[in-house]
Length: 375
Image (cartoon, rainbow, N blue to C red; front, side, top):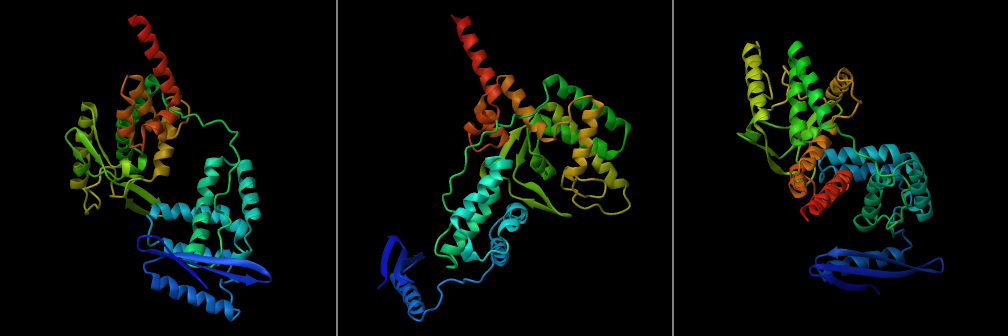
């Protein structure tokens, strides 16, 4: 006889105990809106048990299930999230489990797999890579009733013995020199070099992520403020405008007079190019598009960025170093960490403090020195 229980308001659960090969087993499911729905589902399960029918699809392969799961997931997640899920499945999950039967996956196998990944990858990275598999298996249990339990659930990860990755940024004088080199190069060359100089300047003076800056429209800029409400995401040869990375990434930031004048001049330059063109140019409402109206490719900008580093005889940092540099320079100049956190679009002050720990430590030391001098 099934056990029917209301676990929360409008959330009923059934639990059926049965014996198979001399071993007592149990199957349960919740999420039914009424007691009647839960009872009907439990009766169906009991009937399958009496007739000797399998409760779960014991022949389905992991690879086939994940294809079905991704198709269903595509309806509920952003393109950028779907891309990361597909990448994790292709690179880490399918190579290990593609030809396993779904019912063959054991907890020991999952633990072994995770430990092997952690042997040569950062633990936090492994957690993100295997998360889609945990989610997919949990759906196989709760949503689709293909499995009795999730062998991935609550697995403990080994402790990371790797040192926290130190952020890389430009010292203030190096950044000034980098932008001077970029400006000189723009004056001597074509429109795209000028665009990249403007983009580099904006990134270094706002702390925007490259995707956020690439998705900016002229309408997002109003006098001395820029509103960040979207991001550019590229998969294959297609560009997508998506919502920001997190809810805290929605923000409006103030920009300085130098950047305001630079954007004004850049807009004039783009309008002149559009008027001189013999054809209609798409995407003119976006700030950082090329002469043909195409969004910039991050790989092309990265190549340009490395070239400027070489010309300035500076280490080859990534474009993301401009975001770090802006945050570090704000903190070193005495800006409140709460302000910096909100400007960067971080989810919490703690996140900002952890990322820029060395700067926080320096600020703490200077604060104590000021206190000592006060007395």
